[in-house]
Image 1: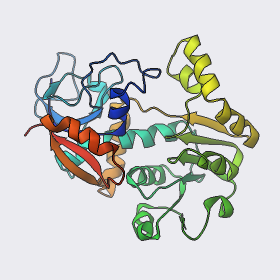
Image 2: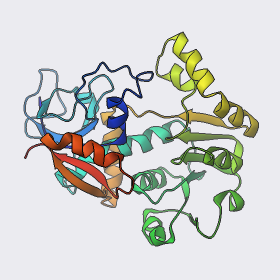
Image 3: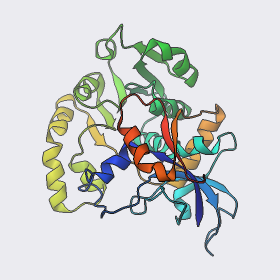
Length: 303
């Protein structure tokens, strides 16, 4: 049993609430929302060995057990990790989804130290965690964004920064081994054009394809459906001789622990946006849907 203290509010919560992910994860509405949280362990089962009452923990909720927008929840120990001491409790609520997305994107690449990774638009909240994690694992990271963020991302360890107002990354880059796409749309083909044959592109914003459906253990019918939906992306990948992956992050306490240890080395802190109380959940989800949020929207559930 976990007492939830804070929960991160994400676009994912709105997608689920509006039924837009029913082909990916068929949640039956009504469904308590919430996909990441931080809390205190209140009770442990007889087989729990890694955590004790009073531990401050955080997690991305398992896909079949979301519901972080609540005072208490029950979760398996293999989904959670202890919170690094340097993080405040609200900050910790903003870490799991982003950190695990970075970890699982890198896992799909089967990279070797010294290879190159381009993260599109890496000056945002995703890049703040993905860059130090990728650098710690031995990759040479390239990103683009606003010049105002150049010094900040260079401190995170990027090898090359491209000011998007002065240069197009597709004009100056070539022979890149891997790409993490955070933009989607027309950028995906541009990203593929800078890659080496045999490279891997992982998208956070593109279209799911048959390979994704198969990795999720979906039925043959759904695999066929996603095969048609993602056919354009698969054709582009074949054209450029690269592999295309769509990612939907899952719970993994071991990966979250590893990511936390890396982030703790530089005391990486997520940017936080507005805070809402639990009874303001609807307003919080509406805030997430607005353009221009500069940090993770947080629910203060313990208040």
